[in-house]
Amino acid sequence: MNNRQIADTFETIADLLQIKGEIIHRVMAYRNAADAIRELPRDINAIYADGQLQQIPNIGATLAEKIEELITTGELEFFNRLAAEVPVTLVDVLKVEGVGPKKAKKFWDELGITTLEQLQEAAAKGELQKLSGMGKKSEDRILAGIESLSRRTDRISIGIAMPLALDFLNELLKLPQVKKGHVAGSLRRFRETIGDLDLLVASDDPDPIMEAFIHHQSVERVLGHGPSKSSIETFQGPQVDLKVIPPERYGTALVYFTGSKQHNVRLREMAQNIGLTLNEHAFTNLETGEETLCATEEEVYAVLGLPYIPPEIREDRGELEAAQQNNLPDLIQLSDIKADLHMHTTWSDGSFSIREMAEAAKARGLSYIVITDHSQSLGIANGLTPERLLEQQAEVRKVDAEMGPDFRVFHGTEMDIRADGTLDFPDEVLEKLDVVIASIHVAQKQDKDQITQRALNAIRNPHVDIIGHPRGQLLPDREPTQLDMDAVFEAAAEHNTALEINANPRRLDLDAAYARRAQELGIKLVINTDAHHPENFELISYGIGTARRGWVEAQNVLNTWDADQFLDWIANR
DNA sequence: GCCGTTTTCGGCCCGACTGTTTTCAGTCG
Image 1 (spheres, helix red, strand yellow):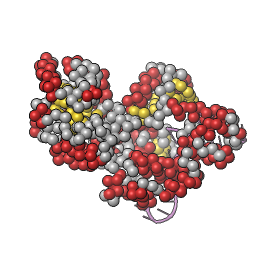
Image 2: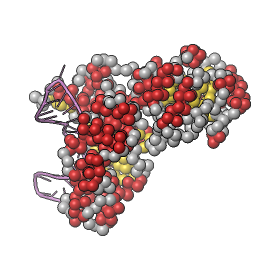
Image 3: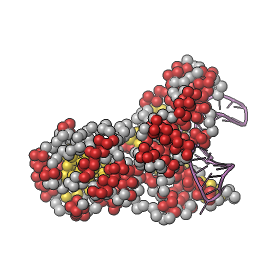
Image 4: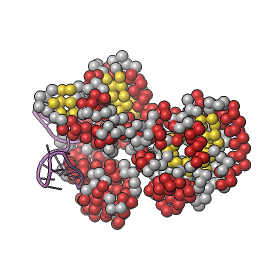
C-alpha cells in the first residue's frame, strides 16, 4: 500500500460516512488525514517502520491503527464493514455537480440508486423530480453534471491551468471597472496539479464584469452567476470561479481565496487570540463589532503581527511559526536564475540547433547553458553514441567561442541509467564532459530495490553531477517510480550529487515536498527546463514556483551561481 | 476522529448561490 492508496481509502471512508449521516467532524477527520497522507514527503511504509505514524498531522491513535492494518494486511476491516452497509459506488454519484451526501442518500433510500448509470437513467425518466425538495431544474442540472463528468479530468497539470487562468484574468483586466486582479487558489500557491481555477478582481461595479466573464469564449456552461461570485465550466474541462471584491476589502479576500484552507484556519485562530474574527470580508472586533478593512495582503498579515507570507508556502507547514519568529525563508526568485543546465537539440530529440538554443537562452537573460542531449540507449530520442557525443563537443566549443565571453555554452549529457543499473557511457567518456546528468527513462516499473539500486549506482559515480527528474512522475497521471527517496537522499548527500527540480509542468520532479527535504539535508538542487524548444525556457517559472513551495533558497540552487562558481563546484565536488 | 498557551472535553469556518420552498436545506469552496 502506497501513500496514495491509503489516502484514497480514507477519502472513500469519509464519503461513505458522510452519506451515512455521520457527524461532519468525524468525516472531516478522515478527509484531513487523507490530505496529510497525500502530501507526505516520505513513504508512509517507512514512517510506519520507524513507528512515527502519529507524528503525521491529523493522524491520532485510531487512524494510526487503521494505517497499520492497511500496511500489514492490505485490507481494513472497518472499511469492509462500512462498504457492506453503504454501496461504495455511491462515491461516484457524489462526484456529480449538485449532488452531495444528502441527495445521494435520498436517491439511494427512495429509488434504490447506487450507481452513476442508475442515476442517469432515473433522471432521464423524470423520476428524480418527483422526490421532495427536487424539481425539474435540479434534475436537469444532474443530467448536465453527469455529462460533464465525462469531459472532466480530476486534476489538471498546472501547465494547462495557468495559461487558461491568465487568459481569463487578462481579459478581465482590460475592463474599465476592474482595478486589479489575481489568480488565486492552489494555482497561485503553485500546486503541481489543479482542480478548479480561482480568479479574484477588485471593483465596485461587479455586474458588467460578471457579464463579461460568463460570456468568455472558453465558457461551455454557466454553473452559477451572482453579484459577487460566478462559476463556469470551460470547454477545456476545468471549472473557473470568479469573485469580485470591493477594493478596500481586497486584501482579506485574496488571502482567503488563495488558501490553503489549513493556513486560513490558523490565521483565523490567531485573529481570535487577539479578539478579532477574520473572514474574506474583514477583521471584526468580537466586542465592538467594528470592522478593520484590508486592501492588501500585507495589511492582513500586519494586523496579526506577521510579515508578509508568500503564497507558495501558505500550507500550514511551519510558515506561520517561521513568520512569528521573523524567520521566513528567503525564497528563490525567477531573477536569481542565471543558467539552464538541461536541454536538448537536433542532435537528439530537440527541435533546434545548439546555436539557436544558445541565442534564445542569451536573449532570455541567462549567462550560461549546458547542452545535454540523450545518450545512445535511448534510441527513440536519437540518443548519442560516444562518437557522436565527441563530435557534438567540437560543435559546442565552437558555438561557445562564437557567443562571446558574456555567455558560456558548456557540454554535457543527459545519460540514461540503463535497466540493469549500468550507465550508458563509460567513465573515460564522461570525464571529457563539463556536466553529467543521469536520468532514468526506461524500466520505470521495476520494484523498489531494483530501481533504487540503479539510482544509487549513478549517484555514486564520481562523474555524475546531477540526477535528472529523479522520481519519474508524469502529471497528472503517471505515478512516480518506486524509488526509495530516503536512500537517494542519503547517497546524494554523501557523494555531493545535485538533484534536479525539472521545471516542465508535466514533471515538477522533484516536487516541492521532496525539494524541501533535500535542501534540509544539505543537498544541492538545480532547476532546469529540460527544453526541447526555445519556447520551453519559459517553463522555468513552474520550476521556480515548485522550488518556492519547497522553501528553497537561491544559495542552494547551483544554476543561480555564476559560471565560475558553478564550474568550481563541479570540479571540486 | 483530531487536538491542546481556552489541554483530556468540547470544539471543529462559514458565506454565496441555487432551487425549492415561502423561510430554508443542500451544495460548494
